[in-house]
Amino acid sequence: MATSPSAKRQKSSKDVPYELIYWPGLPGRGEHIRLALEEAGAEYTDTAHIEDGVKSVLAQIDAKNTGDDHNPPPLAPPILKHGDLVISQTPNILLYLGPRTGLAPKPDGEDADGIYRINALVLTALDGLSNEVHDTHHPIATGLYYEDQKEESKRKAKDYLENRLPKFLGYFERVLKGKASGEGSWLYGGSLTYADLVLFQCVDGVKFAFPNALKRIEGSGEYKSVFELYEAVKERPKIKEYLSSDRRQKYSDGIYRHYPELDEEADNKFIRDIKDFYKNLKKRVKAHSDKAYGYESPVDDSPDEQDPISDTTVDKEDQTVVCGGFIDPSNEDYQRQKAREYFNGLMARDPSASEPIMTVARDLLHFSWQSKFLEMDSMPGGSSQVVIVPVHRAKDQPEQQQRVGQRK
Image (cartoon, rainbow, N blue to C red; front, side, top):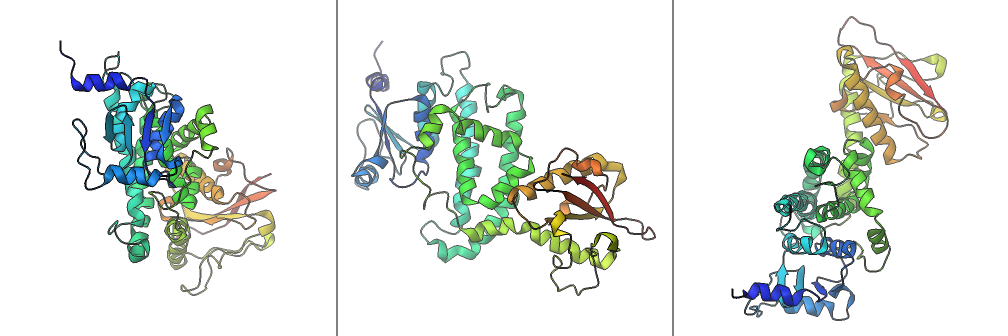
């Protein structure tokens, strides 16, 4: 049987180092490939670390480059050269590297279709946790400066953090809990694949771009398995060494960029929810002050236009937390669970804060004043109390303020 040209190329490439061609100075889409090569311990060169690295990239994507007998010209980096093979596109390169580096099943092995399942996970991660992140700072056009589309970026980032990011994190949380994952720490088949490395890099990039939002999200505990995977990849010996080396490119003006004004929208969502809730609350009920403990009412007669947070004063020395909401005795277990998640998420934003944290959100209008809902949670620093302001559905039911759950 005649040997095909592609077979010849693969054979000639077997013992040749990989050559990664990507822009110096930013991790970008090339970082997914670096992580795979580093984890595999593969020999490779990287144009990010050579003197004429930019020229190497430009030569590949030059409009005059028409490719060769076997390789069409690449449109953009990352580009991988392996022998006389030249390929581009991040997921395509990973599809090639996976079986060759032990980071995906081989097409002729027992799990012949596994590579395609892994590829689907990679494409999903790159869609929602990479490409859409780029769109938060360039929602109109990639050819425009960020400053030319800043207002649109704020709207895009707000929607991304409130809607799109939870959707994709939730998806991968489901994947990790599914049987196809091997019901372990990895996305597929019970062992590390390049899909895990891609998810790690995506989460790492989003953490850089939106540190406040990700701190809150991680602290909520809602995507525990995703962040456990992130930490597990981070601690793998070869990855850990790579991340601390100068081979790891620092974030700059690539896909993941940190603009405080974009992260601020997500960080302040809690404050907006508190304000909105208190405005509505003040119209419906007036809580009684507990003079014995020196607490003022979290709902008073101040004008609606006044900052509702300043209306609430609590004992700062005791680090008292004020919560409020409608009581639904028929669903107390769910109330306690959501209260724990939400409370922990807020504390994760600034666990060393000396000021009390006050939280009420429209999506958490159900709180039980039973102290049990804090029994599984430790609170930072000294003696802390929780004050629950129950707002009853029945109009004729008296309002009262209860103090529960003192903990060291």
